[in-house]
View 1 (cartoon, rainbow, N blue to C red):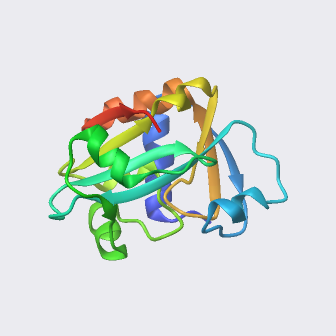
View 2 (view 1 turned 180 degrees about the horizontal axis):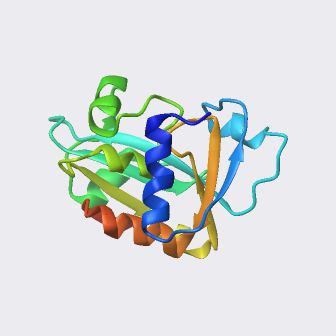
View 3 (view 1 turned 90 degrees about the vertical axis):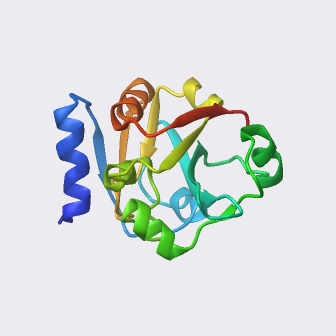
Length: 164
C-alpha cells in the first residue's frame, strides 16, 4: 500500500511521461541491506546523502553510485562550501519530508522553496537505468538516467555535477 508521499512520486512521473519499473521489498535502511535483497533490480543503484554546510543555511542532496564513498572535506572544496556534515533527521524531514533510509531525489517534490541543492556524481551518466526509493524504503523504482535528469530539471532546484 502506497503512502501519500509515495503516491505523489508516481503522479509526477506520470505527469512528466517518465516510465518506471517498481520493485516492492521489505524496508531497507542501508546500502548493505539493499545489496542483500532477494530480488534482482537491474541498473545502477544509488546512494543519496543529505548534508549541510557549517552554518546550516545551505543543504545538499548528494546522489552517487552505491559503491562510492564521499570525502566531505574534498567535496566542500569542490563546491566552494564551508565544512560539510550530515544533516539531522529533523532537517531531512523539514526540507524533504523524508525519514532516514528513504532519502531520494524524489523527496525534492516536497522542497516547495527549492532550498536543497542537488549534487550529482558525473559517473551516474554511464548508467542506462538508475534506481531510487519513491519516498519510502519499502520500494525501489528504476528510471532511465535521461529521465532522472528530466525530473531534476523539472524540479528547478539548483544542481551541479561533481567528481567523486
